[in-house]
Image (tube, rainbow, N blue to C red):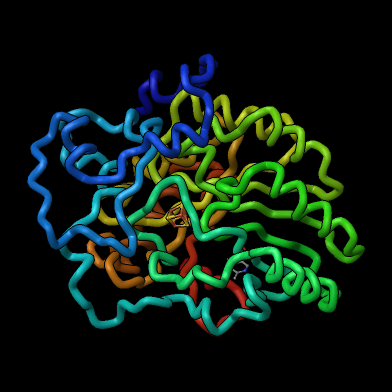
Length: 339
Ligand SMILES: *Cc1c(COP(=O)(O)O)cnc(C)c1O
Ligand code: SF4
């Protein structure tokens, strides 16, 4: 049964410090301080320190973790682990072949009609399962010169109908910068849709400012925003409120999640995730099998178990709340359905 509390949508005022840039600076950036905040013993193994991909967690997200719970599903997504330093066969630094699909600086053109733009390498949170955790962002995101080259590529390829802002997290850019990008894109007549992949409405809901809303409302294309929540506990009234502000702009809201051992590999957890998202106005999109990126092995769920979980969801949920279970396979023309 769903408990009523976790399913009610209420509206709370914005946090006292609603400046999202300050909140970014005030986030947790070392495991000891986060564990102490949660009342947990901080005996973090030195081996789990990763200068190349350090811990990063906004307080707004940490506040949704359960104090005293080492196995909290939000904590496990962000806490570095000594196993990240170990090599495992089959796990590499570019699991989905991103580097081979670069078409211009900062552009990944892997699928027909859709081009993905690496808007920034930065994120508000560092998810330990992230498939781009080893991506060589330096020199591969849009700087001034590279943006002109990327734009020229998009202009030349008239079959591109959808531009996807990705990264990193596009909402890490200042709204002013986002306005510049879409102003330039608006000069390309073949663009018909804009998609934005972002985890910020979930991990730092105050990022959805009035200025951001105004920008979204005025875009000349239908907009799809794909948020990224893996567990129902990631939603709270502040997230509901941010998502409501996004919906008010007319954007379509979808959620994608990664299936992860010990975090959401239970039918009831996944069902609650889909139902809780729906209450916040979000429909499920993809449920991804883990991309086998170096450092993420502890999260892997075997495919037969994934199939069983999806079967369980089909039994319990209306069709529109069942996500598409997919695996990304380099070289394939779409993300492969698993079931
Ligand atoms: C996932 C992805 C897309 C979008 O694929 P959809 O199946 O339309 O969501 C586009 N480009 C790249 C490089 C991707 O990885
Ligand atoms: S927010 Fe997305 S891109 Fe950023 S670390 Fe998490 S999974 Fe990776």
